[in-house]
Length: 327
Ligand code: UDP
Image 1 (cartoon, rainbow, N blue to C red):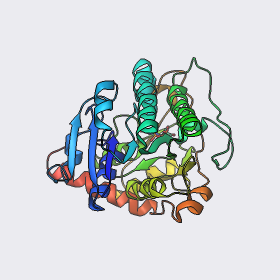
Image 2: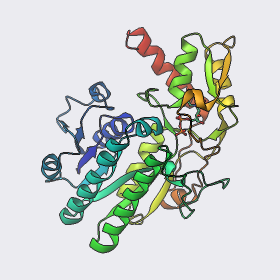
Image 3: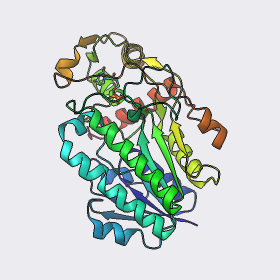
Image 4: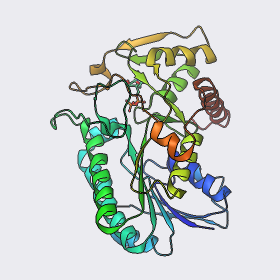
């Protein structure tokens, strides 16, 4: 049995990771300040004898020093997350995404814990390549555009993790998430799938930004969690950076159509320009597709659940919430 610390463990991905690690017989401590994370996400495990929740902020160095004691593995998922949230709170982004990561990395380098750093496909910025490999360049826009602050903050975290690995022998691995979706994801921070599902369950219209020709690959959180655990437990991944995502692109318009088809084919789609959805100077990423060769050769798996299956699972979850009066 390993003792695992998950920062951001009450969040969407973190809570699924916590459940999976408990199911595999590990002990899990979650640190979460419950700002974007929710206590209910941990309902299934909160009374489990191997589980503990510490409510507090990762910006509190005393708490961080305390929670790493006796821990074997650190999964660092806590972050100011989502492009919109980050663009609206630039100072909080730096405070949450950079300083605490540096402290945790230092503590893990000294304490010998294995470390998983959650990063993001946002680090590739607007790289025009068809498929992004981990060695590709980072193409950020100007610093006057707050959108790029999120990817930049995560790129700094990656540089820090790599530096601690090289200089102090930290046993770390980095995972770059590509549009992870599934039950418990909320649409408040711009996440397209829960938004489309809610809009359709409300009777529409489903609101597509721009012409809907922008493309994404959606991965189910259960697949992503499996990849995170395999990458962190493997001995051949140490010091590596890995894309974690589906490699099957879909346009946002066809995503909208699939959601509509599953819920009620009479629902309409409405198109709105980016400037109405985001700030005036917002730049979207047109296409975002990972190359998952490195991931597959390291752990012999990649997120593979079909979009159809993923959408059915999310719709089922949203309907259940509505039946319980929890929307
Ligand atoms: N999007 C949309 N309608 C929405 C929310 C998002 O058309 O209500 C589009 C958005 O412009 C982007 C894509 O869906 O091109 C994915 O957005 P999301 O915020 O989920 O993730 P991103 O990949 O941009 O980080």
